[in-house]
Image 1 (spheres, rainbow, N blue to C red):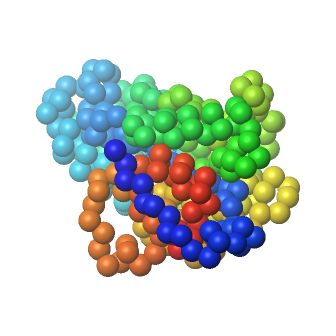
Image 2 (cartoon, helix red, strand yellow; image 1 turned 135 degrees about the horizontal axis):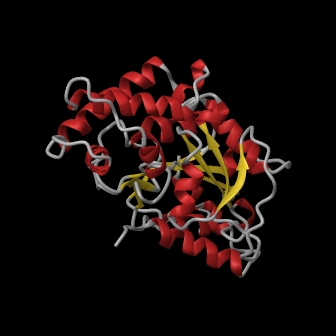
Length: 302
């Protein structure tokens, strides 16, 4: 069971006027925080290669995994933000990654099958390539129930939820295919209002993607973009925003640098070192956030 960190009593408990500022916007990192690869990337690449008739690669999954990580790192440095920095389409960027990952394992002069790259791009745009962490759907079910029966004293009823992700534009399709309802609002992309019919609410109201914003976390501009989307034309202060992610530098520290609250998700129960104890709160699953948000437990978030 996730460990709930109790709220210590303080002056705000004695004086109802001195309640902590409620959280009105919750943003979540996507990859690693909400979903993870269904199997190692190398294993999935090898399976796709075999589907397309490539032979002699079936025992190379671990090596393909290592090669993928090297290629991803090199391509990210050479053409940052999935190619956006150099005007490259994200699909072209990923095609380069796939070629550079798999070609070293093929026999000399053997070309990649024509349909392999499109197949892998589609594969990693849906639940075929990814799986939700076990605590994600239960967390969103709490939000759905709160929104279904609005209660003015329950902050979950009106909580706005968004995604802040260093990613290309496939995040929405991945989350949709994994059972989460994602609204159509994206930073810098004109879109019609979502027409889903479940009390008019999506699980996720908007997405702020690094490819759309033009910068990656920990740059403050992506957090400013998310706050703009979350404000929905109104006012939204930084201390009314909470960001949750699994990366201490890109999620926790970056959010705090712009005045937001932050929570680090650590499902591995990794022992905190001195650096990670300096700021933010660590939880072992998203469901822990439900009680925290309902208690207005922001005094423990910094």
